[in-house]
Image 1 (cartoon, rainbow, N blue to C red):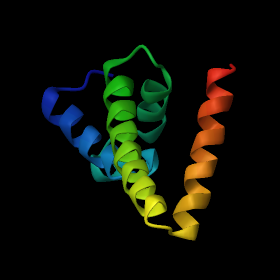
Image 2: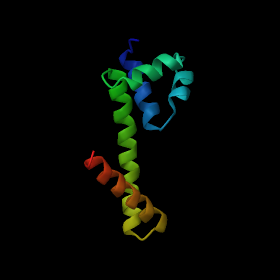
Image 3: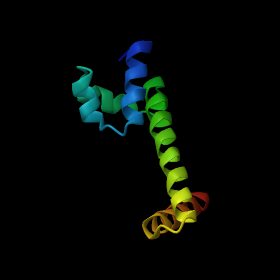
Amino acid sequence: MEYNEELLLKIEEYAGLLTSISDIAVLLDLNEDILRDDITNKFTNVSLRYRKAKAATELQLRRQEIDLAKLGSPIAIDLVQKYKLTQQLSENG
């Protein structure tokens, strides 16, 4: 499917708000299966934009959690430990 810039910006916005693909499809009157297929295909522009927006939000959340962990929040410390483990696993393939 072809996505114009306006639609791509909306998809980015919703992905950045951690909205599910099915909800994005409903909100934007798109076919859910086609949108999901296009996002799953990492070579499409919509996939790249969706994944970047989602990753940017996750990065913001991690920054906040690291700041809270530095202040001694037990929940934040646990989350940061999980992030470290995930990162180490990712580095090892």
